[in-house]
Length: 407
Image (tube, rainbow, N blue to C red; front, side, top):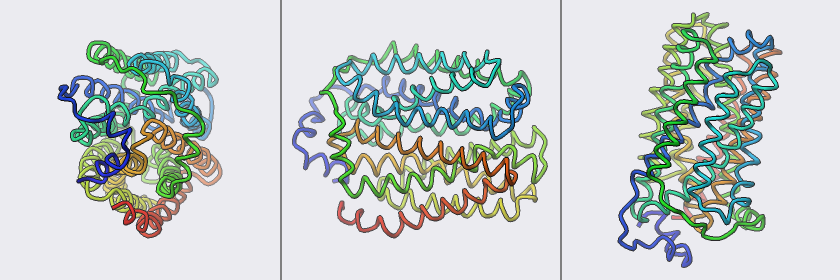
């Protein structure tokens, strides 16, 4: 029996709700969620590949432009729990449709932004959609397929992350250079329209199972596995986004790459992320602790390599690709760890993970922006290396006891 199945078996109410009644798995709806994830992650990653032209067009610094990532992350951190609680009595299908529609609107607003305030408003809308969608993802998978197929459903949903990781950064840089950054955001809006159309056609009715409350989050935070997982998310994800948000300025300033070469390097990151997600999922089936710890350790090594030897084009290319591979394994690892820690409160646990994830993104982007404006892009890469290394060590050592207790 898997860790997840064992946890469910120990929770009678959840076991009753997830019992296989013979109903067919709603795979088309699962795929529609994958498309939604693809649209959200694509939109979230776009500023990293378009940072320089956005800053130039709006007359702001690279560090200020990077705060569009911060705005999205901060709002998503609040939106996750707020949507879980505020829509607790609403059909989850309607919630998903509304969040995907908001994704479309936010991208259109970003495309027509003439001032940084308008762009930030657009990214706030994206943050609401992002926080709500990710908070519900695991809980939705639990309801769309039988319990035994839940890991496969989550793997399919995370394929959207992998595909976006491959496409978003390099395609954003390429289309931004070809058509401009505004047209690139319109393309992202089109992706959202496709996702919404498929969701409208395939998503079954999903009546609410019961309203959540703030006390549920208190209950979850009392669980040691939940607490230690969230601490590691703060360390690793803040480090990653401090570096990745400003990877284009780094590639322009240190190895001095042109736009075409930057697109190639970002493509290497994306391809690495695609395979990293697959490998991370396979490792997470056996041990979520190892999936997170090993991925974080590898990411830290690559960040140190870029900081020390990034002036070399081959080093930057290889290190960025392996960085992408390492990061690709982190989301599924963190989601698996969290879901195994609280299968009885899947939506609330997902909301906590999303909030912590987005706080980490925001803190990383803020600190990264300060370091970039004060010391240049290598400063952000250095912070990335140190923070992620600490997170890897904590997961591989301090979290080991909690993993053994759950086994």
